[in-house]
Length: 285
Image 1 (cartoon, rainbow, N blue to C red):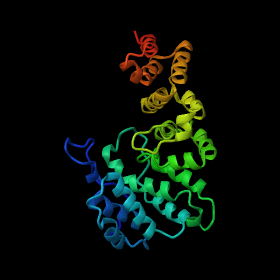
Image 2 (tube, one colour):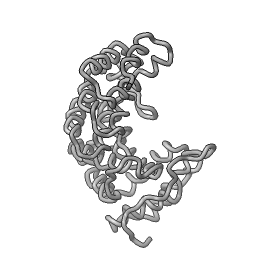
Image 3 (tube, rainbow, N blue to C red):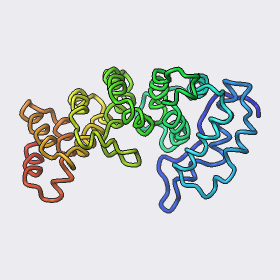
Image 4 (cartoon, rainbow, N blue to C red):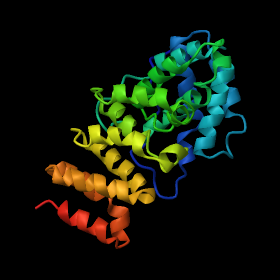
């Protein structure tokens, strides 16, 4: 394979009706991944990796394909996690500062996400050294190209205090993708993601994150705050409703009123009187 600077395969902004998402993880994406790694690590056996990663992949769905490819990465990248994930990070395309600029092409990075999630806590794969710090750096880099909302969840489940401390450091990050990760990655019931049972039982640890980001300049981030609070409302409506009412009493902007309305929409659609009252108070004149 001839080396060329890292890139991502072309992909539509939206999937056509009737088309399976798994087509985003195909031969082209695997060969592109191999090329990207070979560009930064000339010892990487790109062709051998492609053969391995594509073997028996056809019946698998999108997430299964991505995890399967992540296992192939582990087989052919350096045998030390710090070195392996460093190669992956070096092979990334430039960071995205605009929201939604990659469209579905970002799913190219789903195997990277699984690699960090599946191996980023394994000290035995890192010569006994704690891989936490390098994993956090990799998550930050990844979320600026795709998302790390799935990959961060094992860290929140198994090393919650350390991971929340890192999340708090990211709250003021200049990149909106990183700030959104703080809210979206900690959602108790993230669609497609592992549920964080401790946050489902007690959402208090994530409330300061929502408080900090509720007036974020980016709608991308504020929408995540609303969805996160909506997750909380499904199990702890009193906490979510009280939070929304307090925000409104504090003189909410029209942007924050949108967050409030969006957060209680699940209950409002079901005729909950308090949710309907909150939406009425949050109406923008």
